[in-house]
Image (cartoon, rainbow, N blue to C red; front, side, top):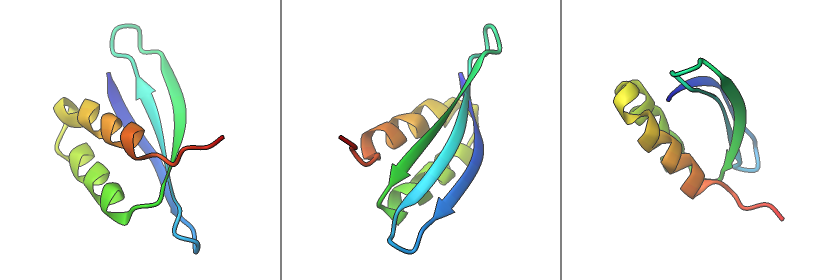
Length: 72
């Protein structure tokens, strides 16, 4: 599994949307996801982990899942 970063959008109200594609290396299937965050720090941590290589892409995805804004 590895991530492809699609885009990061920052809105005036402080919301940050990060769009990624998750690719399964075994069969090369992929799915697109968008995560909404309210923390600049988490966004920087995600980008830092992403740049460090494929070994840390799982950690980057975990960070997004734990930090996303809960919607009802």
